[in-house]
Structures are given as C-alpha cells and as structure tokens.
Image 1 (tube, rainbow, N blue to C red):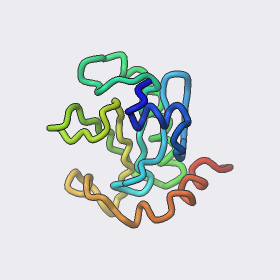
Image 2: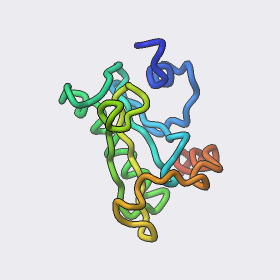
Image 3: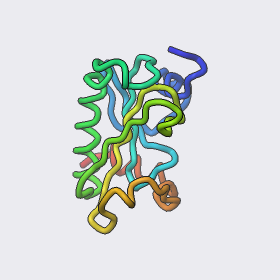
Image 4: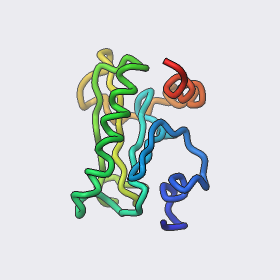
Length: 137
C-alpha cells in the first residue's frame, strides 16, 4: 500500500467510498466524477501504477468488471458498458493506481462520441444511486 495513493487509501478503508463489490484481490466503487449514471471503478487491492506491464492485474480485476457490468445492467437498465483503462499521464491517467472504468451506456446516448463527457446530473445523488445499486433486489 502506498500512503500517497488515493485508491490504496480507499481500498484500506481510510477514505470512504460507495463500494459496489469486492473480493480478496479487487474492489469496485462508484466514481465521484461520473461520465454516465452508474460509472464505476474496479481497482486491484495491491498497488500497481497501471495495467500495461502486468497481465496478472487484469485477472485480478476481471471478476469485478463482470460483476459491476451485470449490476448496472440489472439495476440501472444499462443497454451496454464500456471498459476503459488509461496507462500513463499522456493517456489521461489521473490516479496512478491501476483501475478500469466501467461506464454504463444507454440507448439514448450511444457510441464513442458520448463516452467521455462528464455528466453533472449523474453525480447529483451518488448516495441514492449507491443505495439503489447495493440494496435489496
């Protein structure tokens, strides 16, 4: 764990998050600056700067990617999802702990052009959204 790493501190429970899923190798939580309603991050528990140099990191987050994709389809009615990971500052990586964005996609906003515009409305009620996603079915 790196004390300077935001995601390491979230994984350790030092910073609160709206956790959606976890196992012994990875954690998933809602993104606080979502591009779409339900935008989530899946991160390995171990600190790793990015996933470009370590194929095993993808195996660690794989079950979380599947679980979160299923969750947003079932609970939010997402028609699809995008998985996105940036490796390095030049690629747009802002937090240097490997993470994969799970971005729910909806029929009324299809395609890549609508992917990476932050939607202020998507962040308005993160607590309510979290309760909806994690509460009883």
